[in-house]
Length: 318
Ligand SMILES: Cc1cc2nc3c(=O)[nH]c(=O)nc-3n(C[C@H](O)[C@H](O)[C@H](O)COP(=O)(O)OP(=O)(O)OC[C@H]3O[C@@H](n4cnc5c(N)ncnc54)[C@H](O)[C@@H]3O)c2cc1C
Image (tube, rainbow, N blue to C red; front, side, top):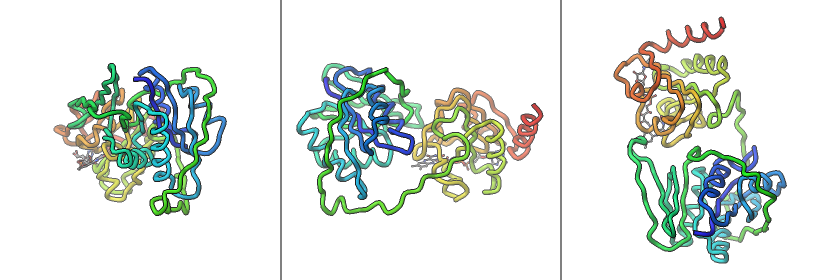
């Protein structure tokens, strides 16, 4: 295995963190490493890619159109020219969209939801978690390279390597006709109070046990006291009590904080898969049989509406 590419998209904070995580992982797999970067021209962002191991950056500049169809077409052409062995994508909207389109264009299998990747000789093995992370499944590609893999965020740490400035190759986005005609008419940056959910050291998450939308206030209060981010189960996102951006789990975000406080969360496997690797898990649930207690380090059997105000008060008194 010699040539690995990592697709990295730009975010408001620079190259997407999951892209840097994948560059770090790819470095450990050996061989030539390049980033395919979809974002504006920025020496700072190119330097971050180099610092995480990319010796070369194929730079795709998005225009006013939704760039994924054109980006996939550009990567397909590049792959034809350079024959990468493995192309890694992060599990983001853009990463999934480009990987799916590339898979269709190239007639290549894409393995998704990876939590680990290993290479032995020419064999690429992709690991997935199923049944709420209780079972690991290894899958190997049997067709020819390039192999396409979409990996879950937080599967690997993002660690700079002290690498130098990468070589930049500008790549133009081709005209893909109707497929590329969707225009970006507006974009909104969510205003964040407190730390970012995926990067917070402490997360206070709420489930249906909070009872009402109003019930989330006590979660926010505790989070503010602890300098924590707030999270949620899908049940309360679907109920419209909190925005989707707070959802933790299979169809939400993956978090690995030092402390995860789950209040009124039952512990469905689709939720656990997004938080089970937190260092310390504290659960508050009035049902002592709730599955969340099966993975928690500390459990309080009680009504969160009684427990949390007392906790907030105790913290306030410190
Ligand atoms: C394909 C698919 C994907 C999914 N993806 C996700 C996902 O990404 N994230 C996710 O979270 N879920 C996901 N789900 C939904 C998941 O299966 C559960 O339905 C959901 O996680 C349950 O949320 P909950 O724990 O808030 O609610 P419930 O299961 O209703 O649990 C509420 C808990 O609160 C406790 N409680 C009630 N009142 C109090 C009180 N006053 N004090 C203390 N405890 C109290 C109850 O004892 C109970 O344990 C998905 C489901 C499917 C099918």
